[in-house]
Length: 275
Image 1 (cartoon, one colour):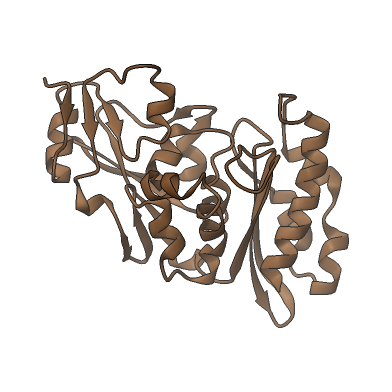
Image 2 (cartoon, one colour):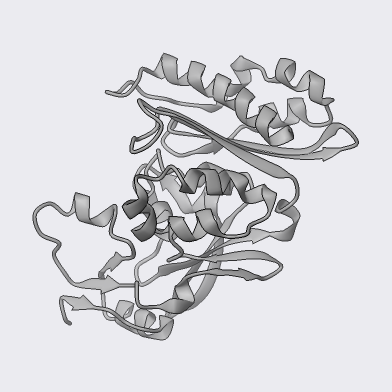
């Protein structure tokens, strides 16, 4: 087995994975910094596989796992994915956005992964392929903890899929950090709102950086659904937001501050998405 391979097709990728454990390289923006002085092999470089990149309509939308943040930010996507595009423009600097991929962001499974809340609010699933076949998992089941995923040995994440039913409405993304860009977030929120006759017909809210994994706020969604726009802010209960989260104290913020920030960001994201 060679230390570095750059296949050109998905079939080649699967064949190499079947030979044993390998490091998967997509953009490398997470892999290289965590590798220390030397990236040890064997490394399977996915950047040559064109079929892993781009957008395709398929009973909703299919986003290839090697699609870069720049691809996402500049694509003509429906308003329901506005939050994902907002997040894409805040993932590091331009060089990082040109190299970093949506699949790498999910597989890295950081609690502060910018792509996760915007995908949770559109009920995203991941497509996982191995020599045994293809399986699909809800994103909420794929990321199981900090730096932990359900990716099995020999599998590669090939795409993120979004059902047609979740592409209605408009979404918004709010992120709080020590500065606006090039920073790991203290808290972040994505919200998707579909209006029905001046009322909230459907709503989804997700919070990241405030728990081991990003989470949906089911209680808040239930409280706001069906409300008039002028009622929404008053129905977002801080206790419901706090109950869903399990933040920690770290060098960026205290747990108490994170909860207060999350409440404010939820209010802002819902208000922007509903405009």
